[in-house]
Length: 191
Ligand SMILES: [Zn+2]
Image (cartoon, rainbow, N blue to C red; front, side):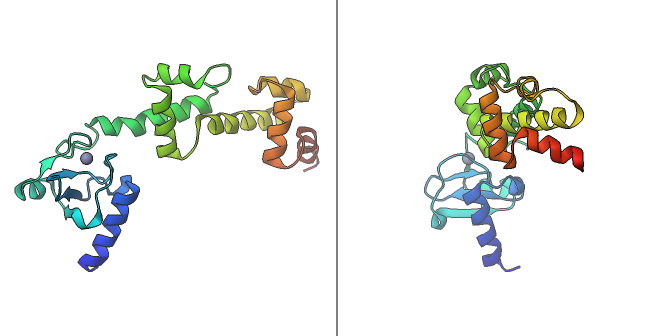
């Protein structure tokens, strides 16, 4: 691969803060004399002001100082930035377990040691979804499990899977599956 082709890929990695390139290279900014990891959350520098280095030593030898936000001089997994994906994964696991049924996003965020806003941003960045859409997916999953495995009434299924009202359950179900819960169960039974 030519250097130009490599640079094009690395610019793209910086532009998207692609975590798969974290540790592969470092990006130095000529205007600030600072070097960063490709995942640095700081404002993006213009392409013409970027210089790439394969090692932190090379960036430092060229006179660049480590960024205080992404801490490129530390080992991967040891910086505050690395905790964001871990917290987001924990939040996803909790929401998938029903943590937002009867609990606010704010309360869940507090439990995980971060602010409501921080949690929303971490989830958006890590899994591209809001706490609400993750919780909805979890409730619909729980509902289809109950519809398939039990003879419980639709109302019972709605509340048991975490919905706050039958109306909301029916609306969400129809939007997702393009049929009512009753129809879904009938088809399932026929199959
Ligand atoms: Zn940085």
